[in-house]
Image 1 (tube, rainbow, N blue to C red):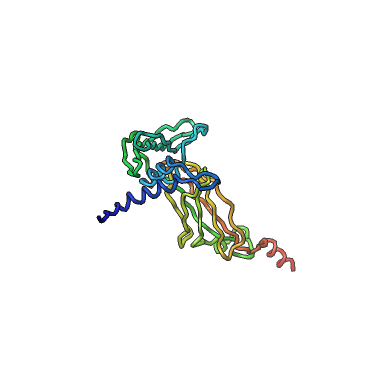
Image 2: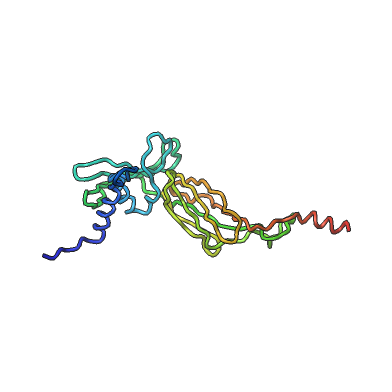
Length: 236
């Protein structure tokens, strides 16, 4: 008898649940629970859920979280996104309830709350400087930091989990949509520059693009003060 292949989406869902539900054999630390696997399936259905972590009852002002409970047929996953003065409890919020069957099927059971405002995330520009061996006062516009294309940027959530990896465009700009929450932006090494810029802590609020960030690489050019050189030349 010939077997009918499983639909692709269902096969992937089952594989994810089986993989995250297994623990290493013969000792070692256990892997993620199957309940966490159910949460991952839910978070994958909506790009606005990217980067959302589990609910922390001890964290004041948590603006986005998920919570998993067992049901007779699988799991129920609640996803919450709040915005507007969340340290005081969030003025507005939206909540989704998903049911995840043991076979991997994800179904939206209900949702309620205010419509989410416009997209939120992180944006900015990657530059490199100094670009001239002499710094003048006032600054010479021709010696402004130059944009850096192709710089890798890794973004981690508050739990240290990587949620995005982006690359700066030809003009040095970058942007990524993220759910509300706390993140860390980690610049990656770029050939030709000295060292790597320090990581940046970023807070993303719902519906707010946030202030543009600047990631600056060191060209290695060591500058002197133009004003001093001019005075020295005049003194001669």
